[in-house]
Amino acid sequence: MQTTTLLRTALAWPKDEPYEDHPRGTLKSGKEAEIFLVERRFTSGPRLLAHKRYRPRYPAKGQLRDEGFSNSTVYRGDSIYKASWFLATRDKRAVMGGTRYGHELAGRLWPMQEWTMLRRAWDAGASVPYPVEQTDHGLMMAFIGDDSMAAPKLAQARLSPAELASAWDQLVDNLRALTRAGVVHADLSAYNLLWWQGRLVVIDLPQAVEFTTNADAYDLLHRDVANVADWFTRHGNPVDAEALYAEMLALAW
Figure 1 (cartoon, rainbow, N blue to C red):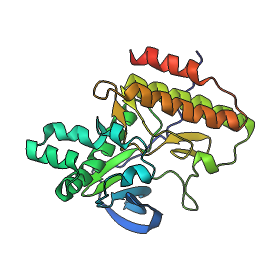
Figure 2: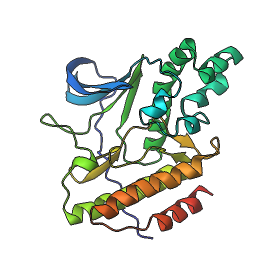
Figure 3: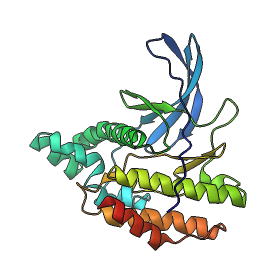
């Protein structure tokens, strides 16, 4: 199987250098989180960051499913609830029971989960935004884009046939890296992938699960593979989802 080299941006990240953060506006505002553009000004030069801040939420029973989290019951096997292994019995019961206190606690666990999975993906060699630091209600990561624009989602990018083929090759390599690291994205689609200057970037990892702790991980992996394979096939780059899934299973085992 041919393997390509993941195109990760080489970061010249200043160490032990003073800086000032300057807000540059809102990039995205959603029901679960807001993302802000931040310019971090070092003496050696500025860096653009994306600051993702989670909103506190108190969804009613069934609301997450109605809003698109079709596998929300599956996520209870891992994701934010994974952290409940280290919680007192009362806290775990509150999280699983959906009380107001449980939602507040889960709201603090979401950013912790995404930070953990983002670091794990980066360390595994996947093409993800560089994780910079945790914040009180979210995380800071490298901004994918430049001063003039943010990187478009793959679903909105206009790729030539050659670029589409390259994007698929990069995606396969990202899936290999994540699978070897024991991680399943669990919500992978053309809307959770960015395209920037020939580089495919995987984003949005708070719901990622592990093979070793989630009994549904293999089904979620199959769904991820089927989703992206269907999108590429419909856009003129036919691929074999089942063959790719079989390869990922071999890596996972």
